[in-house]
Length: 168
Ligand code: PNS
Image (cartoon, rainbow, N blue to C red; front, side, top):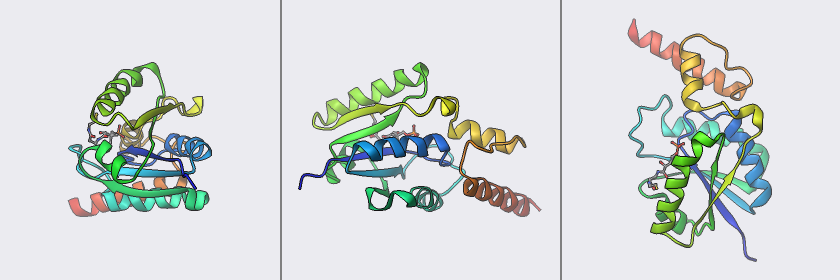
């Protein structure tokens, strides 16, 4: 049987409800979706890659074998080839996302013409939600209820507590 497989790559630091909305949409289209966390990001992450794998595994458990969680290093197109994936899925929340995503998609196409990038839109209620803003709002004491899963809020609280402890 020919399984149509896609990769949804990203930092997922942390997983948001916007990511989960996109995963649900992509899981309906593809036979198998690999949610792939970039390992060698230059950004200074809040959560370790292992913590993010755990959060994504919990968040995608309801999809069973249709969705798996993994990590990758280096070029996305090399990982896509290794995984025998037919497509890369990326979310477009607003026109402002488009420019960067368009550049990445065309660069990836140049590197690997066989891999198609598919853009999906999350529900409009998540169009302003980003991991970066979630972290900032949480750090400054604002509510992120409804923007990330409840268990992610708990892990963010745990991180905060650990940070406060280490500063004592
Ligand atoms: O969630 P993010 O940070 O927007 O995800 C960006 C990601 C991981 C998709 C992108 O940085 C990526 O694919 N990095 C892997 C390295 C690579 O292939 N770079 C060339 C992209 S054109």
